Amino acid sequence: TILNLPNINKENIFIFGQSLGGAIAVYTLSASPYKNRINALIIDSAFSGYKLIAREEFAQFILTWPLQYPLSLLIDDSYSPIRWIKQIYPVPILIIHGDQDRIVSIDHSSVLYAEALYPKELLQVKDAGHIQALTLKYAREEFIGFLRKTGALKFSPDPSKDFTLKSKRISPWFVNVGDFNDGESLDSLGRFYSDAILNSDVEFDIIYGIPEKGNFRAATTSMALARKGRN
Image (tube, rainbow, N blue to C red; front, top):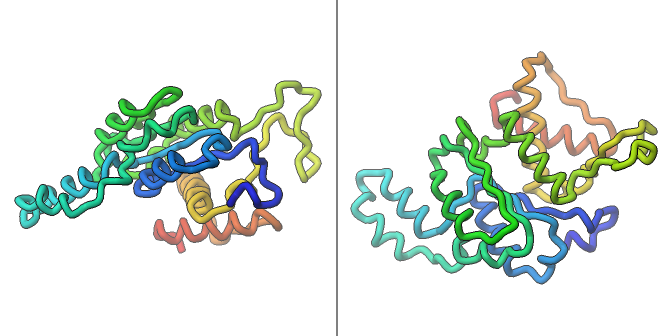
């Protein structure tokens, strides 16, 4: 498990899941014997139930609309987030959803928020589509605020005791990118970097990663850019 990996700050572990990954994260954490080691759960564009999302998808097509309820009965609902989100307590939960999501209705986030126990927060982002909420500046600010509150992002409380980075620079804040050490978090990191590059309007033709941790960041960013048409 991540708790056995070297160079991991075991006091600052959080789970971030998007769409189906968010639904899986709810059940996984609720049933995990290591739940008390997790600082927070963050889910973005997650659906509340497998049967419900199946019915909604079937209802979008004229051929499957009459069959939406019969077909949904074939779906196992045992692991649906709505059944397990209360079991996340006392881990803090941040639920994020864009109001222009055409894949998973924003109503799912309201249902999950109502069912979850405190501490919990709901961030419904205006003009954001499916898993796009964090591409907007104010949504990122909300997200960073939540990370800070849950301990994932640290600021020095005393200017005389600022962090000394590897570059020998002194900084009042610090994020250990080594904590991005699984496929899902690396994919998310690449999306964040690629969105920032594309939104900057800066002309570029190469992505260069400074060794050591810069290498994987350049790789994940390049893959994310390729998915957005900038190969």
